Length: 56
Image 1 (cartoon, rainbow, N blue to C red):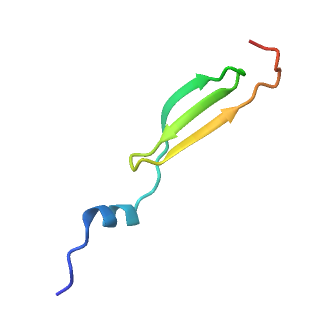
Image 2: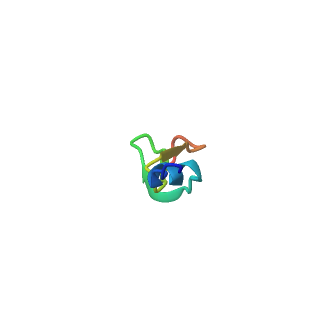
């Protein structure tokens, strides 16, 4: 008989990252920061710079 697979291992083997928006904020330099997370714990951060550095 074969062994019973570890469910966490089986789930992660077939896992597809789903980026769920987690938060948006501004840095002191005026950059927009967007954070997304997956249910597995992976985190992505995107930073957007303003085309006009003098804009508030």
